[in-house]
Length: 500
Image (cartoon, rainbow, N blue to C red; front, side, top):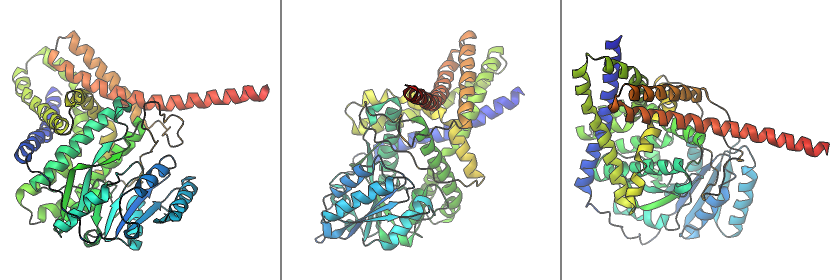
């Protein structure tokens, strides 16, 4: 039994070490390419026709904000088409209809395309809109974005500096980063993705991906790559790889930003992470064989494997969390000293992850010291997501299909804004929340045991696992019980008013 535990723990840490050490590789490329500056090309003599697509589903809180900001983008009205691809089933439909009429009266070429079915979900909406699109280039913004007015003037020129450029992606900026600890940690994670992963991969010549929003496509690139397809939950990652396998080039712009709203409550974030994780696994299963069989250089193939499979870490994080506590007792009673001495080398994986996020903050922020101080909370959060994202990995591996569950948007920006009475708040307590709660209790037992037996090296990791699972379960339960308490209190008040 002990040998089985030690073997499983070794395998788990080995997998985490391999993926964590990839941070060192990214930091290496960061230093290698840090002086490679992107030169803004000149605008073409004649601006092309551009279509802006705005896919949405039940977005009544942010529809006005999105449409107002899109209509403020600096571009000739006679060269700009705006498609609102609306799959909504609530009063978003009438809200959007009224806004579109107002914008049409102001001279904008804007159309409201409302589908009564969600065939293909977001991918299906984009594909149907593309069939009617007038533009040579297609920009896409999700409903939680507020694009800058210079967006097209900063992105379109790159398509003319290289005719093989098929997509230009901008960096996400965070409208509500300071709203809570949850949004601060998300900002740190996303900055790592954009500033290091997207930016450095692009400079080093590796594949990158369209992030689903905040980017522009050459329409002919989309068609050549096989158009939008709905057989994965990450249609953006899927199309990105198909396009690059066809020889199209992508461009990432670190210094051109697209502000967006971060999920302000935990269930919305869990829904988003589940979709991204499961979709990436589905895309890996679909496209990795094509990547490995292609004539790409070996270095690109290896990096693509890491890119498409990095979500496989979550089941191994979960295994490590479960085995950490019995290891305290095994270590205390002795007999495996050489094993634990050898296992200490795996700490370098955490150093690689830390450097990865450290340089992402130093690269763009003056107050990077304050921002990187949230790294321990980020690590705890990554561990806390192990249950939610392991379920996503397993469903992706076993081919279980599920709906495209959009991330609820609440129009949260200032600290005094609230999502608590929002119609889109996810109120159901998923069974995984109870698993997270049980693991929080279990890992707390591990913390107590490590302190009791003076296994000091185990305490930091036990605390991280406990903090992660406790935060996830507490936040999910708080949302659900707060809502039920609110409903009960409202019902009592109504009863009192009626009896009076």
